[in-house]
Structure formats: C-alpha cells, structure tokens
Length: 152
Image (cartoon, rainbow, N blue to C red):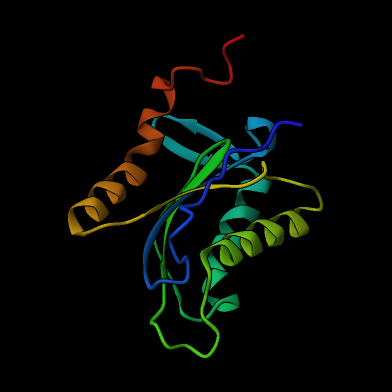
C-alpha cells in the first residue's frame, strides 16, 4: 500500500498564532464553484455556499480572523489568522480548515473537497503582501492556467 505524502511540517505547532495561507481544492478538481469570466468570479450555488462557510469561520472559531480570500471554479485560497497564545483551548489550523470543509459539504448536501489541503505559514510582512496580491489576482490568471479544465 502506497503511503500518502505528509502535508504538514512535522516539527511545526499549527496552533502558533499568526497568518496561514490555505488552498483547498474541489473533489476531483471539478469546477463546482462557478466560473471566471473576464477576470471576475461568477459563483455557482455551491460557490455561494463555500463563500458563506468561509465567512462563518470566525463565528464558529472565535480567535480566528479572516484576511484575503478568493473563490475559484475548482479551489479556494485564503489567509487565516490564528488568535493569541494563552487561549484556554488553542486553535489548531487543521481543525479550523477541517470544520470549514465539513460545514460547506454538509450545507451543500454532498462531498465537495479533495482530501487534505495545502497550507503555508506566512513569514513576514513582505510575504503576506505578496500572498494577498496573489489571491486578489488569481481570477485574472485563470485562463493562463497550464491545464485549464475545459481543454480536452
């Protein structure tokens, strides 16, 4: 049996306060969440559910703050800030992302996500600014994707 590649840094504590860049992909890479037209997102019904589930993260996880976010046809990118150290129950990034994925799928009434997610610990203001720009400009790059889903 082939073992899956470990996605998380083995020695990092994912309850450490700070900013995290997160990418979550749709199940099978399917374009479930809408489309991009003229560099702008046009969310589908499922896309609006995903956006709502993302916006609700701070309500379900006090101490998490949202930063830049973009919904793409087959994935989302967002920056999450985990709260201060010393909380009675520390927030852990995998729990927050897992709850977001589960909430969106439950509301949609079907599984939406591929297993796992990609994350990057944001290290400094310059990287944070670059990631915010990447997120905002992501729809503009959609048609430049190497393997757009509409190409046979």
